[in-house]
Structure formats: C-alpha cells, structure tokens
Length: 566
Image 1: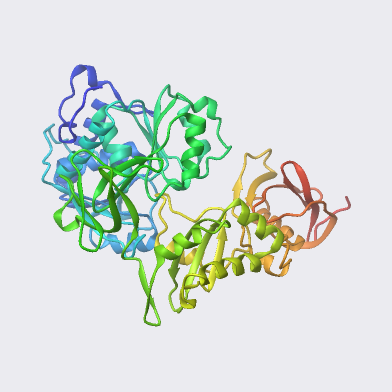
Image 2: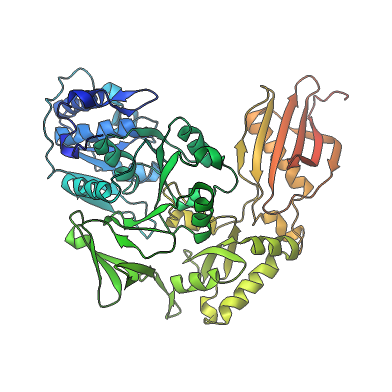
C-alpha cells in the first residue's frame, strides 16, 4: 500500500486508496475517515473550541477526533487515564471533551462524534505540521506530566518506523491504549500512513488478541511485556504461526524467558521498543542484543553516564534521560534508572541495584521496590519464580521473606532491606505495562482478602461461573497455615456468597449450610473454577470449587427465612 504522510490524510485520496479500509467492524474507508474528520472539524471550529480532551476506546473514532482537532486548529489533549481525579484536574484546562464512553464528568462537558453534526464540514486541506497536541503521562515515575508535541514530530517518528520495518503488513492489533506515546504512533498513526487496517478495540487479554488475529491472513501485535508474559500455554500457537508476522513490545523490559518462549512457538521474537513520552520511540532490539537506535536517532552519554537522545522528533529540552547506559556494538545497553535513588535516614539507596540483586535470587522472577507515604522503610513487590512459588506453598510466607531478607542483607545495609513484602505471579501493571505510583501504593497496601473473579460464559440465567486466580499473598494464609498456606473453608464460602449477592441473588442472606464437602486444598497460585447456581424454589445457593476439573469443595448455602427441604 502506498505511503501517505500524516498531514495529507485529509486530502482527497487517489481512486485506488479511497475505498481502502482504515478499520472494520464496522467498516471505515479512507474516504469516509476523511469526511468524518472534516465534518467534526467544522463543528469544532463553529463552536470555537480551541482545546479539546480526547478519550476513546475505539481507535478508529479516536483517529477521527484527533484529525478533526488538527484540521480545526484545536489542541487535542490525551489524558493518561479516565479516572475521576484525572478528569477533574484536566477538565479545568480544556473547552470540551470528545469521547465514545461514559466519563466522570458533567454531561454538558462531554461530546460524541455523532453530536458534531449540523455544521458545514471544513474543506480538505494539507494539515499544518506546526500545530500541537498534548500527551499526559501515567505518572509511573512520579507526578503526571503534560507533554506538548508538534505534529511534525509525530510525522517524523512514524516515517522512521516505516523505514525500520518497511515490510510490515496486515492489520495492526493492540493490547495497549492508543492514548499514550507508544500506542498512539504504533496503533493509530503509523497504520494510517501505511494504509494498514487498524483494530478498533484495545484487546487486553491474549485470548482476545488471538481470536481477532484469526480473522486476518497476516497481522501485527502492539503489546506490552505484561501481556506477553501471560501468553504461556493459553494460545493456539499453530494457528498464529505464520499469521502473526511481527510483535512490538514496550512499556518495560520483556523478560528473556518470555521472548524465548514466543520465539520457540512462533519462529519470531518480539521487537522491543525503548522510549518514553518525552522522547518518543528511540531504539529497538530482539532478545538480549544491544538496543539499536531507530533511523534518524543518535545517542550519547552525559558525564553521569545517562543516555542523551537526539532525533528529529525529540525536543532538545527533553533529550536528556535518567537512564544509565553503556554504548555497545553501534547501540547501547541500559543499566537502570539513575533517578531512582531514595534517602533513608540520610543514606542514599539505589532502588535499581536492590531490584537487580533480588532478581538474582532463585525465588524471584522480577521485583519492584519503593517507599510508602509515611513509612521510613522500603516496600518490595516481588513476582515469584516457579521455585519461589514452590517454597511459598511448602514452607510458607515467612520462610520466603526470611530468605530474601538474608539475600539482601549479605550485600546491603539493613536500612535498605524492605520491611513490607508483597508476592505475585506477575507484577501489577496498567494497560501500558507500567507500574505507576498509585498502583504501586495499592499493591503494597493491605493484602487481598479474595481473588479477582473473571466471569466465564453463563450456562443459564440462574448460574454463574468464574475463574479465580488464588493470590500468592492472600491475607488468610498468615493464620491458615503459616508453613503450608491453604484457603480456609470459611473464606471459600464467603467468596461464593459475595459473588452470588452481586450477580445472582442480591437478597441472599446466610441461614446455614448443607452437604458441605472439602475434597482438595486450595493453595497459592491455583487457578480455581467456581460454579454457582441459585435454586429459587428451594431458596438455596449451590456452589462448587474445582481445579483442573478436580473437585475442591462444594455445598449448599441456605437462604434466611426461605429454605425448603432438599
């Protein structure tokens, strides 16, 4: 497909491109995309909206809104999330919001694209690359920032992506949000210029990505390490092999074992992207090779050994990173953040050094450390390895914590050894694969009392099924039992009650149990299936927990004041 620069996408397309699909389900042609953008631009200009916040779940509609703002001369502002606090803070700085979903805002502040009718569309024109848009960071390294980008910078970046991967083909599917400085160019802008179809929704789960991929003979994934680490055995690799032609990953380091696993099954390695909201994409690599700068990018080290970036899409004021690096083989290797230094009782402590030391312990797959508000010692979030999980299940939490404390104490002062420990199968991450401060604080807070329940297809209106990943750090494990953690029966009954009250029978009140059986222990890391059935005639809730189809527990919960004989 012929290349079209970003600034020319609202000009009349050549006849052979006018009917090309920008997106499907529902179909949106190149010509219809331009018409919709110009129609919305006319309304924005007529309403004299100069600064517009944009939040979309549909990437194609987001593209229409972006180009409408650009054509109308309005500054598009892309929030990093749609939380109430974020929306409230941003609302005071914009004239209006464009979105395709409900947001925690007054109704009069929110517009849909369908609302922008009734005004004459603006004429097709080449777009002014000197105009700007604003990206808001997620706050993974501190307070969220607003970063202004000239459209010219985005044009230069997507040209560089095309020069690096000119053979990229097929639709582009993504597990990351298009609101950020990875998803925006990779999921939206690059495909638009290259004439490649973009997938509308953000697909958060591996199974979703696979199902969507099977509709196309060839496709590309724009993913995060958080998703790629979860692929495991959950996919039909044979169906994807040869169909999935490229995977991009950004938002954090992709563990070597995840890259190796994908290479083994697909015959290709993910292309990792290094960059930031400030710098845009900087470099790429596959496997453990050094990072290679993208076309047009030059890198150097400052006096402190931190990477400095020069490229046509980086503002000089944003060129200096806080990432330690060493130059190697025409590229570079990263050595960790130089600004992640904390002071505890006047001692300077390097968090990356502690994390790297923890990662060398056989119990640890990945670790993230940080301070907590009001605390004088560090907290550690630890993704356990298979050996670590085995130790947790068979020796208990205290034994694992003691082993990790001793490991760090051998090389660091006692002040540097975390006081708070939280254990996971994988470190928590947002949709961009980042661990922002708010998520770190929540994960380091109170240990969970229940697993997250993912609803499965419903057998009937009176039944529900859920997949439950038993947390490694379930609060109940401390007393049940300290050296061999087991989910207490009372907790299993409580989870069944809570889910039934939420999804099946809100009036359910406990009046007793019948036929209660415990046949198999539920342990940390187990994936359990919970089946619920509400029998209105008998006023009883039937529940069954299974792991790999083997029964764990079952019983009947009686409804207060209404149960009948079995």
